[in-house]
Length: 328
Image 1 (cartoon, one colour):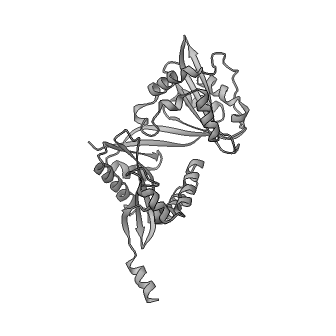
Image 2: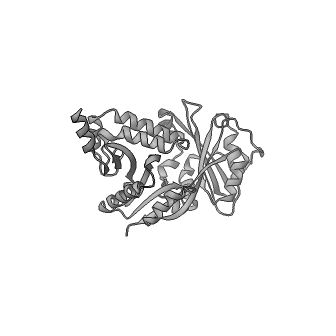
Image 3: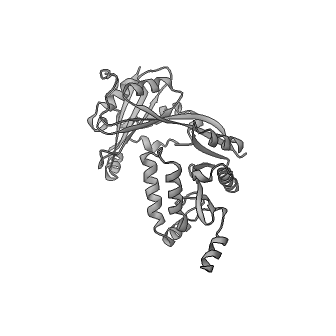
């Protein structure tokens, strides 16, 4: 009894680096509670993965030991109250070749909010990124989350753009179904680099850090299809040509083994062109896509894309503000 009382009195409270061997289960619980009701399937999978890795105990620490800073299971910081994790913020490298860092999963249990815990967690992430020679730190936050945006603004973050996340339920009825546009076709395997160049040119600079494009993502050969099949995935592509040039492209990503798992669309259209509806129509006419939920994340200020997506049953989930802090 006395020993238990002493342990409670001496339990640590405050900020410390995240320890993969003992913290992942507690961090998963904090994230699940903090984002209850708004977590997408990808987030739910990540939480399940953290819980699974957390069960490895000392083995998780051993595996994490060999990872570089910012590249382990869940690098970052936790906040404890009497030995219990009540807050978390992760920090990871944006891309190994970049000098940028991304703060994610900033979460504090509701009963502990309003005490500056999130501010100190993010501040610790900024200091870590600066110590590692980082040139910038960036994060995403719901555009309507004013308390969180205030915290980030007070630390020097500035908004660089907004992304709308939309979802179409399986077998949703469209408001209209325009006829297939004859100018929309499947791309040739040699056109992957052309589509990559288009995607780079139309992706706003302020949004590129969150999901940087890689040329390998746009490979269209049989070897890429085989790799995807072996991993239980499939990609489908359509392009919109005009005057001998590709002015629009859409990609659909799906999981082969689970029709209830949501797929993802990505779309890029050159300025001054309007093949949005034709591209979406070409994709959603396929039964394998129409029969499952689909999600898309797209620059929120692209009014033409937003209008076309709405016509095919895509409804807004949330809008994310991208914020960035330059360290130099």
